[in-house]
Image 1 (cartoon, rainbow, N blue to C red):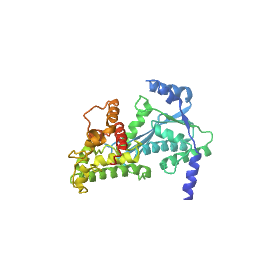
Image 2 (image 1 turned 45 degrees about the vertical axis):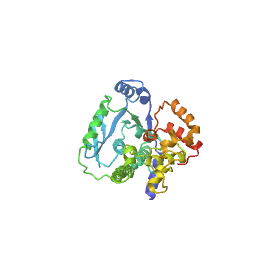
Image 3 (image 1 turned 45 degrees about the horizontal axis):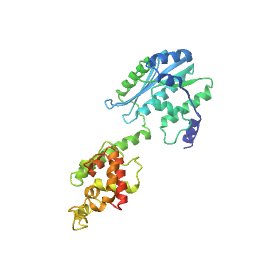
Image 4 (image 1 turned 120 degrees about the vertical axis):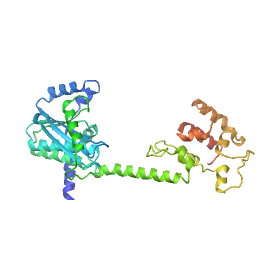
Length: 340
């Protein structure tokens, strides 16, 4: 434990220099390869360039990482378990490049990666405890290099993928080849890579169970409103008051505090509205009931200003749902003291 804490502490101290000029120029040009070569020749002509890449595909049996040093004609390929993320593959590739630098220490180096998230992570001065453990390993190697070879300069440079930069194209092929190979060395997958896999599994099992239950209950709700394309509920980030979310959910489930719904569960014996209409349901109360007509014209006018035209039915506002329309309806319900 003490060793782990020390490694984590020393990793916090290690910083790599980030080349930012290319990112700025790349945004304003269609000639990425030419801009890259110009920066290398003018600023880093004395540096050895190392390219790194990671590769992951559903069609590959594993995950690949590679680093390629053209000047030395040296390639390192690493095959990782299929459960590893592409970010882990990018980290492992950078780790391999730094280990290569540590073994040689004979020059200044520019390490090129097409993983912007990795560059941003390396640029951060802090490492959170739940970070991918390879980030700690990378920064520990950097710290060790600075202690043992303080004059050695290492630059991290982001480059775009598949833009004709030859070294990047070559290391991309090497990473793909590694991903299509068998895993012959045991590599433990970081815990950070397991969480998305668990989430996918839980989501898949939940959808399966909901589909099973919909075959004998709640079928109307399921067919109208359920979607397996999102892992969040419909009200995620909508910033609605709790009471608004509650009555919308009640309407979507078709269980709400009006007689048409209460009669189905034997709470009341009659569905007749106090205005005399045979069925007191939500559409009647919103659009027709004389008991709630005081604020109806205002509600309809507001819906019209939002280019929502009659005929109105609550179902079409619930399906998406249309938050703008539902807020207008919410105001109407509050003014009529209707508690659904």
